[in-house]
Image (cartoon, rainbow, N blue to C red; front, side):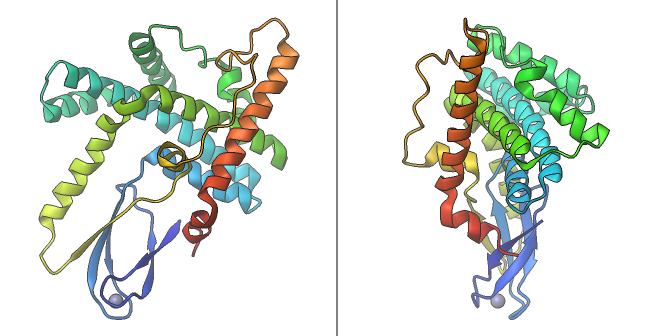
Length: 273
Ligand SMILES: [Zn+2]
């Protein structure tokens, strides 16, 4: 996927392809100037935006894979943030802690069930309560598998509901993480700094903060839609399940809708290709 960048020398717009690292070494197609764009955005944010874009463009089925990947990468982000937060509290060296974590993550990197196990422990240690969202239903696992593995062609509104569900879960956990998220974000800053050290002085460095949906909500001004009174932290086990479930779905839709609106103009710019 591509995004527009502006040459710092002649203002020409050059397209850049999203790099996994968030680091984009570019050369202007008009004046030949070299510049480097660092994209301050987490993997789960990029994936969620890809899903949103696919959904808005009418590719409902393709969107599911991106939303599902966004959720998986967010769980990883949560575990990493938790581990680094703990290390910081114990006054451990950041670099040592980061290396230990990456080495540990290699044991679980190719199996998502193991990653969910890591998340479960991280959550209970951090929040002191059961991770109630780790059920197949709350994670939308059945729907996702039906689409991704069994070729089911979902309707647009089914995918919108799934997106809203994933969005609400990530948004809730990000809110609970609070400042701890910055520990994981520091890793990206470190990688950016390392790359910057390798660039000659003639290369202009640009930092971009793309308005991902979560970023817009975290740093935006508007308040969250009010949760319905009988919504106990999005649990669906209250006395009147159907009523509560309906409220949950309406709440999730409102959150997702609001996040879409908050991006407004910025999303259109982001869509430039
Ligand atoms: Zn130029």
